Length: 542
Image (tube, rainbow, N blue to C red):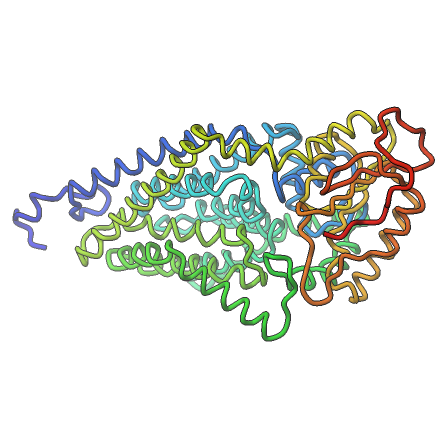
């Protein structure tokens, strides 16, 4: 580009940060799209305040409730989440309460924190990329609905994004204390989802590449490792002291491999079929509509960045997020959150660098505008349909009918000191127990897949022994369409020992076609008991 004035320069504005020309029309279009999408995100956040717990969120919240009231995970109740999840959910309930509104406020606080961290770590690439990425992901996340809310990948992204903010691209090499703090944030992410170690690797490579001398490189990596070891070691010591470390390691070693062999339809897949499943899932994620936007943004940034190592950092994060679900062997909808987050961040880079090749750069900016406006349209359509037809409200009322009815029963019939046992996973029983603040024994999803495996057989035996010892006053049995039964090889809906125990000691007192509430026979009868003598206590198979 020549130094003298020409037509191209007259049609451009100088980039205050890079001195490179930028087209007036596209700048205005990007700014307008960011403003519109930002307003839509605020409206979506306000509209989400009426959302209620659903699917995984009540399970995690209830586990956090138990922990906040003195229970020790793995030792006192069986669960498969990492310790960081319980800490996050305990914090949620302590600060904001355990009801639906507290859940929503916590979620929005987390989203605000993630948006802030996103803006900070992308700010060196330009104000427009930072704003576009923070706004677009917030809108994408809210458009995904309540089923995506407060998922573990989402929670783990927050410390990861702040870690990137502390080591933001283009900034001078971080001091050793700041590098150690980055490591601590990385450790927090791993304590929520161990596979996030994969997403940390690109930053470690970037830290090594940007160190001025070998001794500086090793010092920074050592500081990072020490920082990461602090929260992980502290958690391990806590588990050891409370007697939970052994049960945790036993669960992780024996149960995780069984659980991760199941697909999103809860069907176990092994052998060559599993390889095909992982390849197919990775391929589908790669063929997402966000992939070409991300590649376009990376290309524009790489062609115009003065430091190619930054391009490799962004590309490494995107690739790590792409293979993240494969590392865990599952492709459930929330496992894709990291990929969409980094794809949106990569796509947004196109709005900050506009010089060469000019057509590709302009195309990248237009793509970001389309991405922002599309997510805005999706949000507006949801709000419009819900307002005109009440579709979302009716759906929410329908899916919460079961937990609401069970919670009412528990509040009315459960006496002080009595306990409740759910025979359910995501069908509403645990949600009801959270609403009624009722005690728990174990979830029973874990007993119906890989039923011939020695570990599952031992889980079944232990469950019956603990159930006989605990003698819960009430048992909630969800057995219909609301229960996600495992399927495939070595799965079964039969649990003869449990069915015999229920038949011998419990009576049906309430229920519908999809759940039933059973009460221990030796307890006083209630005047409003719905039990009919001679009723079949065995679990109905749907």
